[in-house]
Image (cartoon, rainbow, N blue to C red; front, side):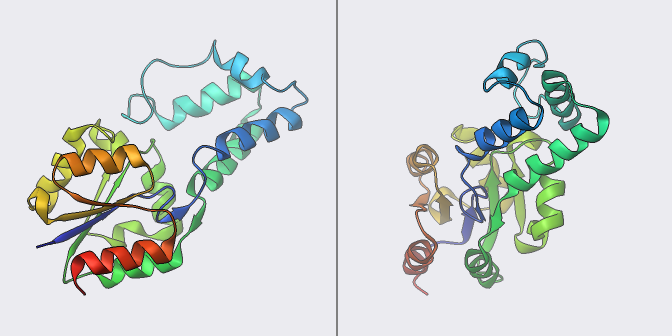
Length: 206
């Protein structure tokens, strides 16, 4: 019997093309700064700090310095670039799915499980108020674990106080869905909003 529903953010609660926006954003800034396509990636070689952003090993300040150094940005330009990066990262709220998630409480516990980077909690809370939407938020950069690592799913269970068979999970990345299923979660591969809402509703027997 399901007791908890867990949602991903990027590509699920937020409409954003995770694979597309970084290149679009970078190409825009290469054009703005008058450098050749590909110059940004080349410039990063000398400015990239060690560690993983997803695991919280690279801070937002380090990311800002990395980008500014790679393109030779002024302080104001770096501020603008970071603001545009967060706009692209956060995309657009899927209002229907947000409202559906909100409707599940208090009958079910709800959570967010997201691969993320330093600054994501601040920016997503400011825009969309996710801390008020769900009972728990597990950001990869805050816990040092990222999907599809089994440990981050187990941590989410522990925070919710539920067993694997009591969790329904929604994610748009099939690798993450498969990992959840292997751990005993009921996982829904998110493709479009109406279908996801219908499938989760069916699973919950509502």
